[in-house]
Length: 387
Image (cartoon, rainbow, N blue to C red):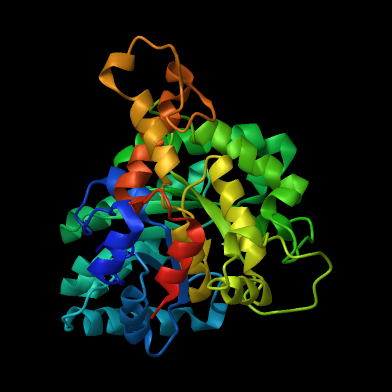
């Protein structure tokens, strides 16, 4: 699999200075954590789930979560588990490309039970999403995952979801974050990425952001994201990949504010229709939130609708300017530090302070590619959405 692998090789050559790398589910955790991209969630109750998985893979989805938790009713869990086992068996019998597959469970015992019931089709499973993750619950979840991995012989990753009230409430946040840091640090080899449950954060205060606002406009949510990155997203070797929060909107509704997409990137006629479509589907707010995700240290995003996938991936591609700066900063002759003018002659690159940024940028360039100098996100978005 590879990002933008669903478009033709000729089209990729026209878009990329450096094409996204090819990888599979056996790639290193370093590559997989950066390559998750838009992680698409689907309820495990869907009767044609296997068909959905194959279809989304053909449209460029790299990672999916099949959900047994909040997306289904409590009374549906048993039937959803049976359906999940059936759909995995169906996928195992097909000769088709599939994305990285994760199952979102409710309780630790579901992990060992499901891995046992999946049988040989467990080879298609990349891991589990662990909800309402705290130190105490996390130990139980990760112990169950370790047992399931040993019993099945299948490498299994965990993606904890940080969404508990203890994390949100100011008086318990520091202690909760420190506890989470301890448990994920102990099980580092199993933790692929940390996910943010912003919907649960808002729920604790009876809030819901509109399609005109990003998660960063809701100050109580923004404060938690900041603290999570502060403790768990450090660039000193102790940090983890932290993914962006879900964007809830995918249908048009009456707008209170002006669209957030400037016309200039969409000029020359060829892309004005694309701009209009993004606005009509409330995706201009999504684009802004993706940019803010990256500015705040997040990579990838939880998605609940296929229309969100292409914008996330298009905005994850490294620009030629970013790539040029990162390469200059990391040249061996720069190890002593210092300051240099960007090759684009529009900024200062200070070698030591910008080194961690440059390393992260080159990893993103590896998995999402580097755009040609004259290619912008509009071109990438249009190409990704062309079926």
